[in-house]
Length: 157
Image 1 (cartoon, helix red, strand yellow):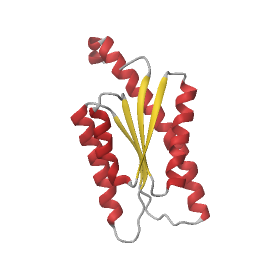
Image 2 (tube, one colour):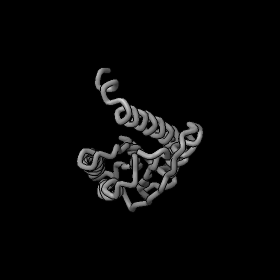
Image 3 (cartoon, helix red, strand yellow):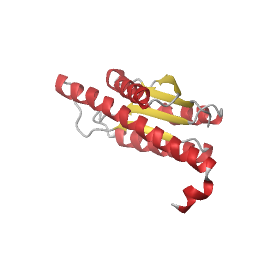
């Protein structure tokens, strides 16, 4: 890890008006942290495309963390459960394979309907989830740095 935390942020474009808000919350929270960082943003068509891109980015060695954001909704055909599970499993496998921490801001609501009320709720909720992802990235980055500089102290905890 360098002095500047390098982060890739992947956003699925299904429901971009909602998902993009997670990026806003993430960027704002990172800026408030005062930690030197840079964020490269990547848009993909849907959630299913996120794990492969995340793994490819991690394999470059250019990122300290990767965040993937999506909104996987029930379109009435039960595919959403499969997609959500495949995405989280794929991110976990990519993280374990590459050693680069990956964070999911992917939500799968049970009963989303494209109404003003639901859309407004999830737009605001994604801002919060993005901020939570930033805090998770910062905590894992601090642990990683501590492990590299004081391996025995971290192991003793």
